[in-house]
Length: 431
Image (cartoon, rainbow, N blue to C red; front, side):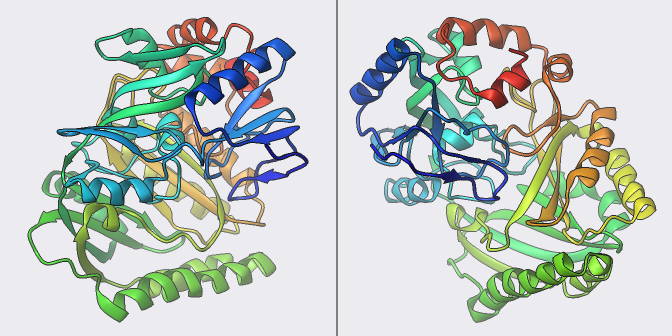
């Protein structure tokens, strides 16, 4: 246990000074902590690795880290049981040793597996769901200190609420994941034209396992990323790939971003310059080593899920709004595609989806840009990514999630004293 410690997230958009920072190393210890918190009228929040942009973790009471509760517990064919504090990058290597892999991942691998699942983290691929769809069983400590085990077959309603729960039902201690045999991917980065890319979005999604693209504001430039299965020998692209990924994409962009922060009026020219230098590259490796991208430039992010059929109209409206308003903006806009699911608080609930992510460099004002974009997203029945910035409250959110009331029925049953609630959760849940 550590006291008087300041917790800050990666982006610097959330900070708190918990009464105690606790590192349990067993389920029994976690249960005892919850029971004691209930007895003393304390609140608990769970900190992963700080890659949520919201105030989801903030608390002035007890902050719990699961860093000491990590690692694979069991491998049974293609089903693995993993402790909730396990880092995704570490998990990838452990699965690899067992001849397995996750069927899909996002582009950041530093989160804990429970944190990524609980906030609806996703990758891209129209035949692939978000990370929570890979979960087959969840074990968590509820607000009474009880150890709850649920799955599709056992307490299904609890399971559907727990798959993406924002840490509001309890503290996840273990989960089982459906994995696949380890596989290699060939990744191609290709420079393209915005209108041509949109014309061929359906084709790109149909013909590639994983497709996404970045649009550079105030230009016609996109960077398209295609990943497909391959039997080729792993090859990281050598020094050329290193120069492009680390020095150019991160190092040079960091310098340009600092310039934009100091001289905001030049941001549009910076975006145009960045678009000119978009390169093309190719590499091949095992899947978990391909999905992740280095993130050395810090930013604030908003990401919304919209119905797949609304994507083209929405992204064109976004582009027009940016061109008309002339924001001080240089960060590209990320576009990904995900298969629909039946998870109650999943942004992809009941619909095949497109995700559009907007960013602002850390230290630059983002409120007007994000507010204007959110208004567009809402027109298309947008649902926010739970780990990214948004300004919606309970009234709006309840209209967008058909199972909203069912989730809260389960949440109240699992945490009747509100041990896991903080001010942020109260604001979005309306309590």
